[in-house]
Length: 102
Image 1 (spheres, helix red, strand yellow):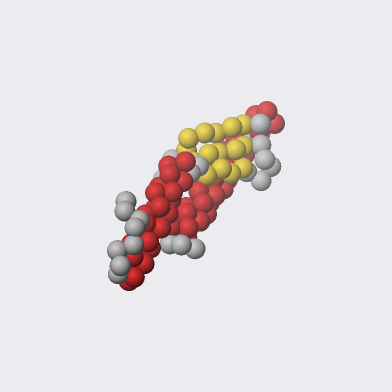
Image 2 (image 1 turned 135 degrees about the vertical axis):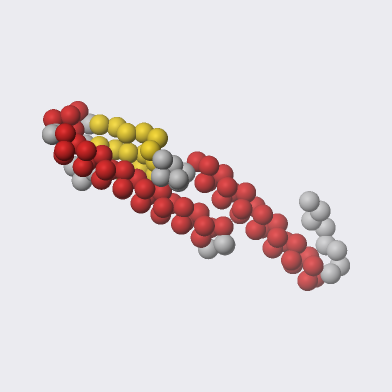
């Protein structure tokens, strides 16, 4: 993209702003592609990883998690997944703020 001054200060300023916004948008897109929310249950025995969409992509169990009852293990998985979704949401908010120049 041409970065030479055109002689029109208002146009040059607008173009510089456009280039800066475009750069932020490109970086934000890359950050969204790499975004993964991570969370643990309260005990730390279960870890979940989700995409920005909320899709679960990884679930890890500490050996102590396998000593839990089925109901407690299910609750731990849900808690870890909720924490991961919250983390993904917080990261997405940061990216949007960055996109808008914040």
